[in-house]
Image: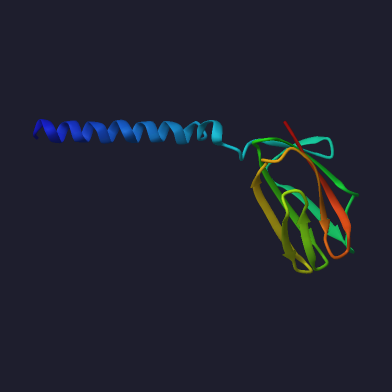
Length: 131
């Protein structure tokens, strides 16, 4: 085997080891899947789920707290059709009766924002993004 081939194979092994190390370590600081969000005062991991029954948020308006730079992951499950609108970020998604919609976006704007069923003018959540 030539020296050139040995060096090439050695580089491949080193790169593979580095990639494997990063994957096993969870991807470093950009791993937002394990971040916690506060939902109604309780820390939870992953996706915050808001349930809508008869056009109203089950359990009242959900309070969601994120830190700027986190990944906002919200799922709305609804028994009524409407547009779920995230104010401030100005994102709206239509949900079918008996269906769900998901929001997955970076927390880039600081402040307090309503999430509502747009045509019903029914607030279902309050999204707070802290500095």
